[in-house]
Image (tube, rainbow, N blue to C red; front, side, top):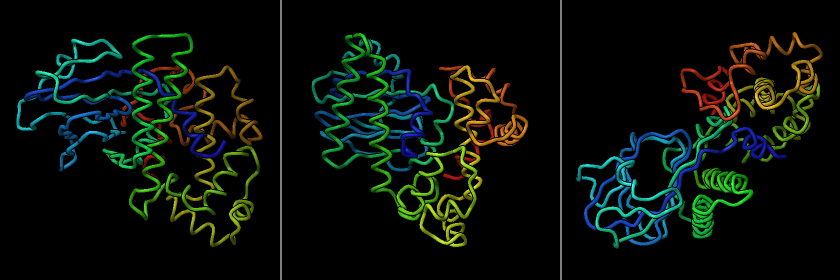
Amino acid sequence: MEPLSDVLSLVKPHSYMFRGIDAGGQWSIEFPAAEGVKCYAVVSGQFWLAVEGVADPVRLTAGDCVLLPRGLPSRMASDLALPPTDAKLALSNAREGGVATIGDGGDGFGMGGYFAFAGHHADILLGVLPPIVHIRKESDKTALRWCLEQMMQALRDPQPGGLLIAQRLAHLMLIQALRLYMAEGPRGGVGWLFALGDRQMSAAITAMHEEPARPWTLQAMAACAGMSRSSFAVRFRETVSATPMEYLTRWRMLVAGDRLVNTGEPVSAIALSLGYESESAFSTAFKRLMACSPRQYGRHLKPASRLRSAGDRPRALQLETAAG
């Protein structure tokens, strides 16, 4: 797989909640913080969206779609001056996949919800995105609305294979947000996501992802990028905010962490598959970046457990986030 798909395979979206909203009259709803990505699509009418920490509210009209990748507290309202009602209370008249009536109803219709992640590395993706991703391109809007409709249908009428479909839809929405940000986001950004937009850096990163066990040298990485060793080292650090070897080690440890949690492979086998000649050398590198031994990591991080808070996050994730 190419690097973006590799990273997406680690985050494992799950824990979905989607509903339709039929709003009218004077209304205001307050949504708490949520682990994961919130997303909304306006089918008809218009309303305001305010996100904690973002100075200017956004006026959403029919056809607009937004994603809130960081799950920050937010408010939707006909008038932001109105006192808000807690979302849990306001949406209690509709089950998952159903339609909740807000206020008097009849003035506008929208769809929204969120999905969280079972993987422990979501910040690698979400940390590089802005608090609000406003989708403006018509083809992207159409695709996102279709995803939301299908997600609501899967929740409203569960069918065999529905969980897998929901996972694929969540991935699709996240990919759209990432592609949009790569295409329209501010230029000159630093981090692995921005580096994928650079043909030469992307070639080197892709090669590392394809062969993590290869005994990589700086010269071999530079050859993949079609650059001299010195030029490659400078450009990589400027673009990714890490040296090529730091990036490779970090990626190996993230892959190892995922396998320790989700497979029954012994540590020795994982170490060998990622290019380490001995289990002890791998364990030393793992502990240095993840702040615990491989066995401790595998025992304490179980599949589908909740996301860790920033302060409780393994050190490698803190480094990933800092690097973009």
